[in-house]
Length: 253
Image (cartoon, rainbow, N blue to C red; front, side):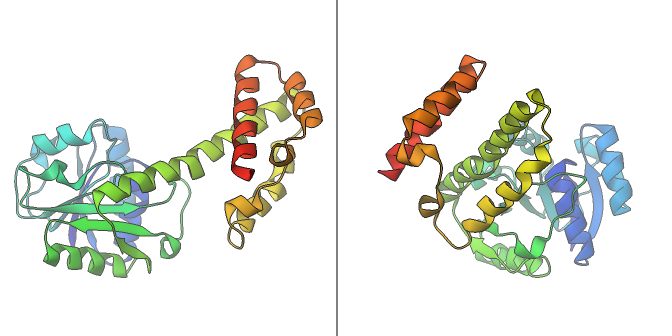
């Protein structure tokens, strides 16, 4: 298919490369930031633009990978055409396209992406929906060359999927950062945590998170908890530790 990428961030970069590798033609890249648009266009060997009014109207698929805050405004600024308009956002409804495009849908890859780190799309679940059955089948066909895991999920359900992903990914990674800060203060390299992190992630492939939970908070060992609290140097750290420990204990009960 002929594809126009509206956006040049992390998702657009990785998904654009995956589409190209699957045999689709990336016709054009748009980003309001010229540097980002040019960098992705070079990788995809296609032209780019920083102006919405210069977007081609000949593409079969328009893939919007933008921040939630700007997505509605960009959609509203687009000229209507006959292509299928699809966004990749986890928490935005499909119907934001209503009134602007005749054919539209969602293609949400549930994974964390970075421009500089390649991912194996074959293991990534995609959650799709469309306002017509033919376009639903078309999205499945497009993804057939990229992943084996495609699920139909309406916007109302997808927003809870995105919320759960924030807990499982973004908040978890922030815990890594707090761990890193504690270690930095004592001159200990963060890499010593990697085997523990790997095993923690591996366990939930075999056990439920509830059964995999360990540590002083599960048994509410106040001797250890109070000692840890006394070692933390800021009230914010103490608050986070206390809140998480209490919640882990409540879940364990």
